[in-house]
Length: 297
Image (cartoon, rainbow, N blue to C red; front, top):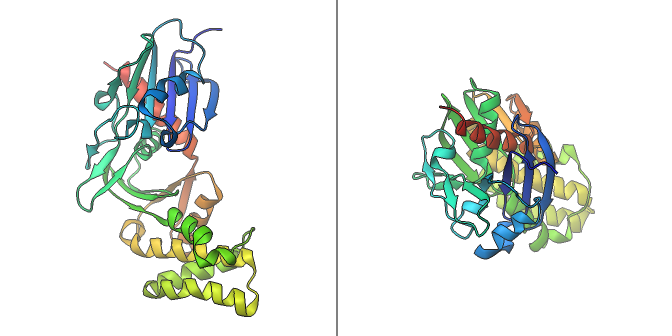
């Protein structure tokens, strides 16, 4: 088998994604595993990577984004500070490897001093979006466990805020008293109601959350309706706090799941049109942009 020209890697907390790449940017093969950063010690990263690759026969450049560069990861890659362009190979850290044919470079994350905030991996998605939309000036929303709102201007990350909305939903729906009321399915009207309640009365959200449980006990509230309203309350609370980011701005949502559609629906209900872009594609485009920079004089 012909060796790929280089390897693109997205190393998250729970998953590892690897693309074998041709010189022209074509994906030759994609592979993934559950060997995320959270389940590996420092000596486990190189073997986890090699399990997804053909044995290299020539020196092989590997460009990595994500949690492999965290303090608890393979090798720490110090944060770049905003305002900054999304970090590229000049800021990347070269990782010592046992296999001499591996040339591993880990891209840094991005940090903000006030208010204190950090990201790892999302900055590569931002780089990918900007490589395809170089004139974009506005806000990028990256839904997930910790949703990011990123202000981009003149090709730079100007500022950003992270919201623990996804983690809060997981905790409340699985570990709080509300777990007894949750169900499968989706109720768009209940979601919209939750968004409106939270944006109109953010100080009352703690009470509105308990109302979900009370309605389940007293009125037989449907499980899908309950979980959809919970999602709406939490996303609405986030939108209320993030209003300085999205109000009057061009907004793009980087995500491919139902969650991204929910954010788009909530924003459009506020009169904010939003375009969407696939997260995995943006990550790969960001890694390709980093690789292309190696060949730029």
